[in-house]
Length: 403
Image (cartoon, rainbow, N blue to C red; front, side, top):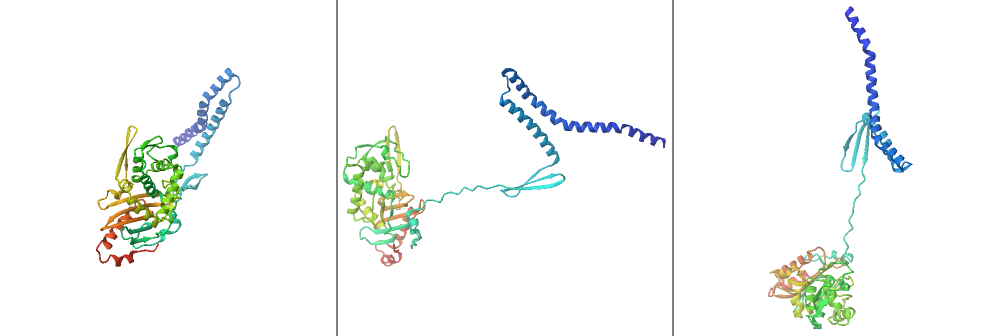
């Protein structure tokens, strides 16, 4: 019993010492952040003192830095205290929802934040004139992507297939077929040198060209590039340097169209970049027939590739119509065209199944759809309209679609 009593007395004797140690630890934990912050403030204060001795008043920047350091120290102490008070947990609920879970004053607090989503909506592609007119809604037996189509036997003038062939639409670079025909018929010197100028630069569609301003080529070279690879600056330079100038050339284009019976056709410039150059499938069939009669236009428009020397460089140009290189096709004359208002366009004279055909495809939807339409027509003609086929005439009526 005396031993037990002695033990209790000894414990009580050290109790004040334990309390003092606990208070000292708490004070250290509380004052340590402030001491650390004060250490960080010393360099700033020293700089301020030096600046004050050297230049008099303390610069505004130094005062501002000292104040911001003090604020940062206070914020840091508060942040540590808050961190000690609560532990946060972030939970993501899907791509746009974030939930933060933490404890505060002994309670669990859940904060849900929904992030705003900015959606970038691309502008819809610009509609062609044919789409705006509802021509793409016209159905046909061959399910063509072109809203306008016409297939005519060049010798008999028999219409094998037609779809919206009276519609008047922009014709894009099909315009160059008339440009090339007039330049060829004018018999101007093909070796005459022509320089590309700023006037030939496209301000209508801002299209690019490999023929930079200052490039000098012969008239024959420019004609080749205009008909084969649809070079806009080449076509414009040909019209600009025509005797009488560009205005005279455009008036001759319209006069030639009238002479050929192209009553729905109008030209305002020689490249086709303007949507005001317009025609119908029936009119374009007349133009293809006239272009086929010109040996120069036949040769240059069906050329697969061509090289020209520009300064110290040799530029390689290729046809815009890949059917020219196809062994399945025998093409006499051709021209492609595209601007957004016109869609994909193609005109050709070709021999198919023993028949000389004129094909016109306007306002086709899709980059390769005009080529696919031509292939579809060729296979259909081979199957139903080949020369000597007894079923040709009977099937013809079934496949014609009113325009």
